[in-house]
Image (cartoon, rainbow, N blue to C red):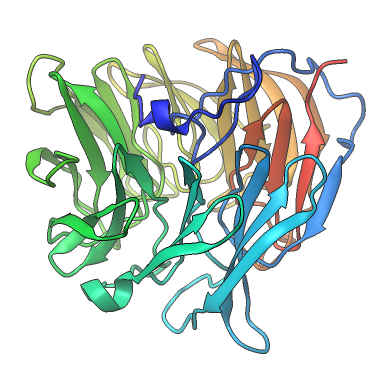
Amino acid sequence: MAVVGGWVLLSALGAGAEDWPQWRGVNRDGQWTEKGLIRKFAGPEIPIKWRVPIGSGYSGPTVAKGRVYVTDRVAEPQQLERVHCFDEKTGEKIWSHSYEAPYGGVSYPAGPRASVTLDEGRAYALGALGHLHCFDAARGKLLWSRDLNREYEINLPTWGIAASPLIEKDVVILQIGGKDACVVALDKRTGKERWKALGDPASYSAPITIDQAGKRVTVVWTADRVVGLDPRTGAEYWSAPFPRKRWPIGIATPVLNGDRLFLSSAIDGSLMLRVPKDRLAVEQLWQRRGATEQNTDALHSLISTPLLMGDYIYGICSKGELRCLDAKTGDRLWENVSVVPLNRWAAAHLVRNGERVWIFNERGELIIGSLSPTGFQEISRAGLLKPTLAQLRERGGVCWSHPAFANQHVFARNDEELVCASLKSE
């Protein structure tokens, strides 16, 4: 498993409790290790513990030290991005910060994309236009901020900046697509630049850091390749091509299991790499791409990050098909179309918890199930949120934001509200 600065991100809560302090959980890998959870839902709707109104946005909530963080956008009377902090137990607002952010060149302008990252009492919030703020996480005091668009001459991606900030020891690492600065690292305490690297255009994919050959290696999927960087200096250790057929559309996060690193794109298909444990290098094992995003091969993921579990890959393809692939070859072992109604770019988020998987689909349903090389078994399903239209004005709206699973609860948002529901076993 990749370890992504987990020793500084773990919260000192009670035994067995687990926060969700950054994108995709404690270690940025879609793993949730808590026990004492419900086995099945009691009815067709999940009882809501609390709900609070918020504006629109794609960013998923994060949870740390008794607080829930989320970003949103309001367009009237002026265009603002906002960062909110709520009490985890009650939903009471603790603090909020807003700033001007006119979305002139952002397609799908519902709001910010990147989840807030929590680390050592600080909250790092990155907006769709490159506004980066560092707050005292408990009180909301602004510690420092940077206008990365202005400072680094960002070639703004079509759908804005989306990759959630990554903390690695004493730096915060960001994929922004600046001039000769696709990736930048700032001192996490002061915001001062430590290094910048790569002239690549940016993708939307959040970077991760892995251990390889006794080194920490930050893995960044840019618009055209996968790069391994020294997180201390930005020096390039290795790279592997992953060329785009059309526009950059890499959104899913790279996933690591053992020495295999897997990536999937809605248009450009799947790429499996090997990152040897004994040297700083990378090797392509296989690449599969269908003729189009409608006529797919292997796995063409858009928003949904796959799970790489041993010799098998489980993920959501471009129309919402849940697929299992042989990790050695990319061959499809099975497909299931029951998780989410089939539509172009239909989405569902997969989080592993022991032998079970929790799936939050774009209809706002939470599903408990199990995955194996022989198929998907649905155990229970219930409604959590209603779809809303700001993220996608089709098919009655969607819930595209990734939920947070923390302290035996689920936290999820649409374009109107943030909700909390207990998943604790009675």
